[in-house]
Image (cartoon, rainbow, N blue to C red; front, side):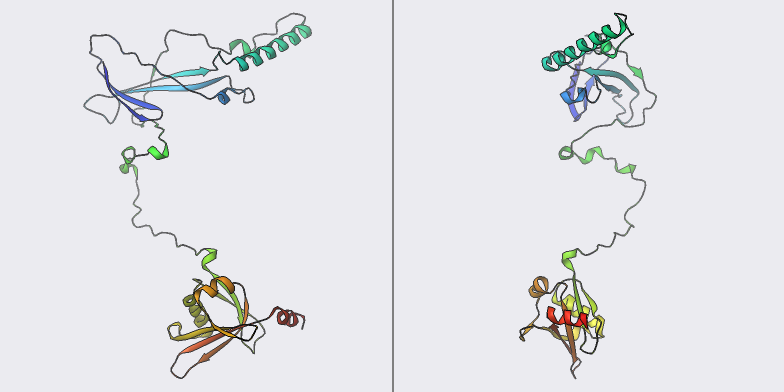
Length: 274
């Protein structure tokens, strides 16, 4: 008697079996589906070896099987694959003709093609496996994965005290500016992280000794001579890797204002040649 059949994996099925049933033994049919590429001649594959494993559990203990048997099966290319069979037969006939010519009709021994197909047998013996504690290997597709197949007790370490790795800002979240004062000749880098007005204020304050909370404003003087108040959008779109002359003004009330004066490319080249 067989009942309660349940597919617990793509490669496993569990069922209830009563060995004391007087109706006789139990027969189970197993079908193995393979692709034609599994028997490609380029790979040298003429048979695909597989293992069939049967774990028998007692009704009172469903954790560890009291018996585990296994048997090896080998799947061969279907003889009904006409195109493949015709190709192989023509190749074998050509090989036999060449061997007959070179050996004068004498057989050179058993060839691989002679054992290409396995003879059908009535039954295969299942061998006993001593290892019973190791769980069976179940293949479960990612979309079908369920937490019931995960044993949380198998984790032997506590991850609650492990600190996460510090995240590094993405390239799009940082801006590099090159600035110098009027009386200086060497530019200094400003790492603006994040790429916002607040990030720029912090970068200027850290570089030139100001308080970022007391920054009254950051302005940009374009090459055309106009002065624009810097905002987040301007910083993201127009100021990446630009060069500026910076004027930092400290007011009597403790506030600080910074003006970024755009350096024209012609002035940069002239300075480089000087």
